[in-house]
Each structure stands twice: as structure tokens, then as C-alpha cells.
Image (cartoon, rainbow, N blue to C red; front, side, top):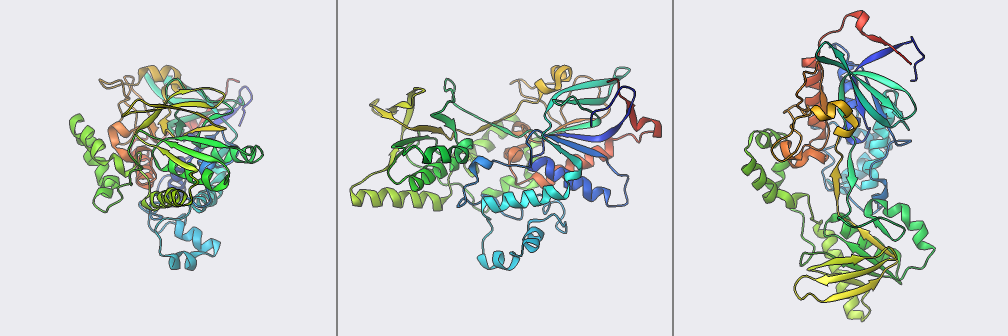
Length: 436
């Protein structure tokens, strides 16, 4: 992709930053659009990973998805798509077996395999192992006409529209520094081999959500001589609210309603329905952990210890953890082989990557980025195209911002916006001359 000085390089209608599930879904939507009678939309995606990967560190082989297989990359947008999970099952020879399984929620490793299968079908529009380091505006008078997307390998792409889908970043509590014995749960499977060679005696798992419960269950099962101490501020693990009416918060129509609502209503909706996703655990896993705790009490050997209504107040790099009861103030000091923080993720802030344009993105009274209904950033400077966000829009579009539930519909809306807003270029505008 590197161009020599004076060489003509193509101008893409869309350049995607990152190639996780969201931009993969967009690439599929673009492929299906271009297979139709309409004007083609040219696109290319840049992904820093050497190959497609989605939360590989938590691909526990017994873990299941928390979203229906029907909310795959395409079905909510195009039920007849050849990129559907059902078509993947048919290609893999497991469709009948899956139907007989009578389950809406596939194994997580299976859904990841589906993503890889779909990504392989559109790999001609993605460059792996290529990290975007800067985005620079290209002006036509006062108007930003294009975006020059620069990569770490020295290559550059010119785009009419930018779609940023850089995913989430692991989040550690303030004051906690990652190290050999302190790490985020996103590294779990990458750490397992090293742990198996050390005969660990104790783990401390901090967090009350699905990931925390999965980590506790895995470590407890994999290391039968080790103690697993689960620490969380709640009285116990709380079940995820996946009831039929509550799940309407994930409906496409709910995005419209949330976007139009005032801030007090948005705040209430997030509080009311946070249990559909945040700090919530599948009931089956809660029951399994409770069975283990009870069985160990009967046997008189308690390896799975729950420090509820508690918090870690001191964590040393050596793995020494001081846990404080929130009700009594009593403190317990534990020496751990590893302290695993299952404390969630935060959306990546796209503005540092946008450089000069980042400073021109408008924000609300709380300092959050303003985003249009079609997921475009609102800027103070006129843009001929748009900068679209896939993620980081929970404050404007609701709880589905970083979830799979609305991905297929969202990319359809982004593509529709790009198609409707674009100005058809003259032939001589299809290429730019590289100054490299």
C-alpha cells in the first residue's frame, strides 16, 4: 500500500480503522451493497492484529454467548444473507446438530469461529498487521474533503469517510498497575500455560460480572490444589436480566427512542436496565458456583472463597492483597500467585488519533463527544464526508453501543448514511497523487 512520490493512489469511499466484529459487519454490508445494482462503495480496513481476533484471552471452551445467534453479523439487517451464522453452521456440517441442541446461545469459541469464517470471505478489503497512527484532514477551501489515514508501516490511504471501530480497552481501577502477578481478565488464556508450570496456591479475582464469575470457575476447576478468592462489593453474584420485556432495550427501535430522549430519561434507562449487561452473571453459572461452594463446605475443604461486600484496598506487585469488609472494616491479607481484575472495559477515545480534527469535535456539557443519529461525530468544521463511530456512543445511542445486539442494524444505518450523503466524484477525483 505504500506509494512512491508522484504515484496515483486510490481514494476510498470508506476507510475503516480496526477490524473487529463491528467493522467486519460493515465490510459484509458493503460487499452485499456492491453486489446489487447501486453505485459501488469502495472501502478498505486496517487492523493492527496479525489476523482476525475477538477477545481471544476469554475464549473459554465452556463459555456460551450471552446474545442470541440470530443477532449475528447480518440477520437483523438481511435475514437472507449468505454471511449468517446459520449458513456458517451449514458450511461446517453442524446445522442439524445445532437445531437438535435447542439452544439460542452458541459456545463463544464457536461464535468466534463464525467470525473468522465470515472475515475470510472479505479478507480482500482488510490489511492485517497494520496499525493506524494518524488521521490528517485534506482541505478543499474551508471544507475537509478527505482524510489521509497513515499507518505505522509508512503507508497511507485517502478516504472520503472514516469509520472508527477500535473496540474497547481493558480497564483497571485507578492506582492499580499491571504486572506479572496483576493483570486484567482479558489476558486469562494467555497466562494459563505459565500458571500451570508454577503449581499456584491462591488466586484473587476482583469483580462481580460474567467475566469475573467465568474466571473464578475456570481457575477453580483447572487448579485443584489452589484457593480461589472472589472479591466483590455486592452481597452475591447478581443474575443478568434477560427477560423478554427487558431485552427490548436492545431492539433497533430502542436506539431511536434513547437518542431522542432527554438526559434525565437516558440516565434512568441506563440505571433501570444496566443489569441486562453490566455486573450481571448467567443464572446457570451462578448456580454452578454456589454448588461448588456448598459441596466444599460439606467436604470440609473450602477452596472457593467469596469475599462479598468487600474491596481490595492494597495490592502489591508481589501479589499481596489486603481485602477490607465494607460492613465491618475488618481486613484480611492474602498472598496470591495472581490477582485477576475482571473490572470491565472502556471505549477507546478516537480524538487523539484524529489529531487536528479531534480538537474540532464538539462535546456536550459533560465533556462527551456529540454524535449524530447516523453515528457521525459532530464537528465545528464542515466535513464533506463523515467520521463514524462504532462504539463509544452509549451516552447518545444507548446500551447497545459496544454490544453485538444491534451491530447488523447499525452498520446498515452507517452505510445508508454514507451512500445518501456522498457526492459522486468526477473520474479525475478518484485518485490522489502521493507526495511520498
